[in-house]
Image (tube, rainbow, N blue to C red; front, side, top):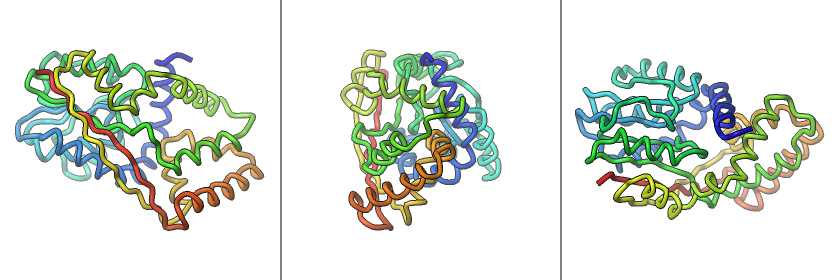
Amino acid sequence: MNANEAILVWADEYSRMAETYDRLVVPRFEPVARVVADLAGPKAGEMFLDLGTGTGLLARVLSGHVAPQSVVAIDLADGAISVGSYRAGDAGIRNIRFEMMDARNIVYRGKLFDGVVSNFGIPELGYDRTFSEVLRVLKPEGRFVFSEWDAALPDGSVLLSSLVEKHGTRTPSRDLAALREAHRLVMASDEARAMGHPGAVTRALRAAGFARVDVVSKTFPASFASVEEFVALEASWGRIDRELAEMPPDARRAFDAELADGLRSRLGPAPFEESWGVNMFVARPE
């Protein structure tokens, strides 16, 4: 599997999970999206591009600020685009244009957008091409603002991933096998790991041609009423959902017990709270 194939595997999975993601993840990501929007400073009449929009959270946050101009919201996951379009229409928002498009190949003319943004939507593989494309479509006085997870991942997420690796089925379905291969490709990639380090991302942005890069690092609390609520959120991207669905019954019982014990020892009894470390980048062409 190569990088392009891996990205398409993830896109298919995000499409499958779009409604679950929108219900469980989007409310928790809204505080991050609002910080990204504040850093971007959208103004009435400005045209914005939202990369890896998912179900359109950040595009909706921006839409009221730039009206009557549009937000162009792109993603490779057609299912996410469909949910996002429905959500915007249901909210009475008419100035978001959802399009299925690869952030590494932005099919718009140069120097069109006043701002380009993304909330956890930059591709982990090939983002050097994304940065170059953003610089091409951004006006000289524009800004590129995006959020990324810090390399120091939350304790609970690290624990869950290790237990999935320990207890996962040894006879995966074709779909799960493809997801595992895509995941291994990302985990083995120096490029993907660098996204968690502000210095490395800053160097990549400068290599793409951005003249100025500022970094804002913040911590966001994430509270969970139960272990089940935590697992449901972690499964909302798809891979963990498939892992749990295919886990043998005895292995699943051991997984549940070890996860509950591990979360109690690391984070205390439920309700418990995790800390999400997020880096936000503000890059300018001039």
